[in-house]
Length: 571
Image (cartoon, rainbow, N blue to C red; front, side, top):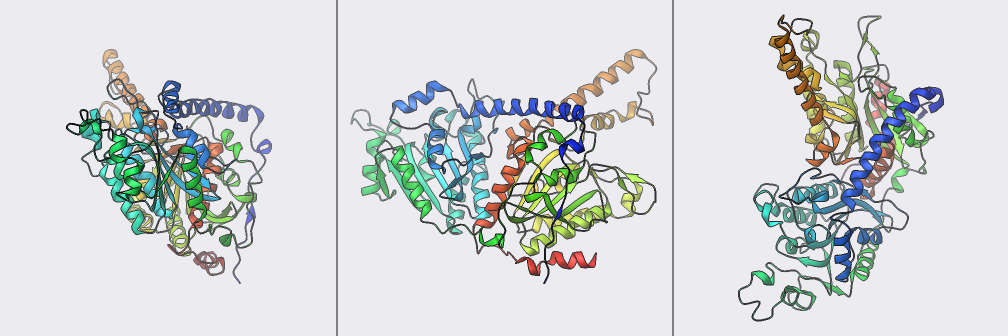
């Protein structure tokens, strides 16, 4: 019988790093984490206490209070898309989180996706990127068949910005298409209508399996303000499309409840009626366990200088249960590490860049820089990715990559072809894939290692993520190549000319470095969520558990018949 033999990896932090080095690295990350936490808090506050009080004055709960009551007590809320629209203004207005909360929460032990309009931000209006953010959450739910809960309190499009939210391929109407696709695949959708539900906000809950309305809620194609004669006839939006109409006459809603608290309890009851999760079945007798080495160590393991390497095994040791790991192809392509560990008692495949120096496979005594894809490493992770897909093992990609190898040897070895093979594999995989951008995510290497264009279920970043084609200094050298000699020194004798080139190169470098900011990437939805390194394990626990929660929609082999065993023997 083939067995999965997991081996202990990793060392205690005290043996790994000296106190001074650890303190410097931990202090730097703590500073970045604190800045991130402040940005998170600003989003959670919406437009501030004044608007939250206004919501309460209407007899309703602010959105975050609804979510807190909806989730299981003592369990975390894991947001996605927190920083969408961060730093952007529309006229004199901001839209924290694009005016909608999307998150993973547990309800009666099941992971769900909640999509909740933030009623403290322009009455839950849809801003630029709000439709895209909602659709992203729906895509995640569809990919893993997770129940979707809509907490609807939406006054429709924020009309001054309608040109960017209404017409496009990913415009507001695509939300309803995703509603339909979720329904067609049998993914449970439950909607609670809490208040204003105008135009698109009115369409969003309709395709759900069950729709609840409070007595304060209404759903209308157009509010009373747009109906001719409404004012003289004393018509209100509540009278036009309240629970009286939609529960008892139109049948567009199923149940009416007195208030938010009762509605949330009814949604919890609906989730409880669903079949239980299958994750315990797929643990094959194992129990969930934390890493032997604490995941919070990751807040101090990464060097302050992004050009310096570190031991990638130490990262894996702080992500896998008991810090145990089965490495596949350990002697091949050592610039890449791949293998299997458990997360929350469930098997997951890991692929991580090794940023340290590694031995050249042919030239003895020669070492090659890590964080680069060479032929052997590409072939290794391509085969591993295919095997995980065949075996039904969710894949976790941990990126710290500078790109592909370049030069004459790389071209002679056909790296274009090997890279294409890896891209084909990841483009056609059906197994859930999750990508974490630990540090560098550069060039075509970012694509090849299941970057966002290759549809991972979730892509996470950290405060030190650097997402770009190339580093700023490298790009500046390329932009000013005609002004430099073979050693990349400025090829001029005139001091004024030298200073002009130097300033130009610095401006390019500074601009590119600014563009690499992970918060900016998250603001434009190139990263789903920026998290502390010490939070990676928490998100992966949820992600891997979700990958096994529903059954019958993808292949999951029992470990005795994994293709990985064949690879291990043949290698």
